[in-house]
Length: 98
Image (cartoon, rainbow, N blue to C red; front, side, top):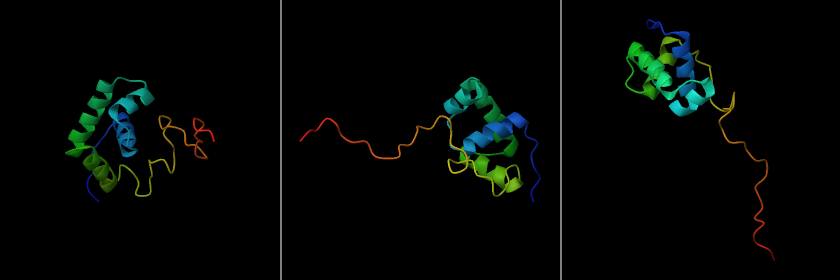
């Protein structure tokens, strides 16, 4: 296994949100910080991982063992509190009457 870069806990936390597909703005709202703070943490993580972009950083994190191979960050294991609620049945169109 490759050498694991020394990321801070906060950088790993931000990277986990990226793995879930959240935007910087969504991460900022969720963590109660500014979008600039999120950008700073992610910039530092990308630099340490030598990642070209968000997807590359997440792939490297899995590859070097920062995230476990079986770890899932998507809606299947933990829905995002920012995601819209799903409806169980389709809405009926009430504007059309027969």
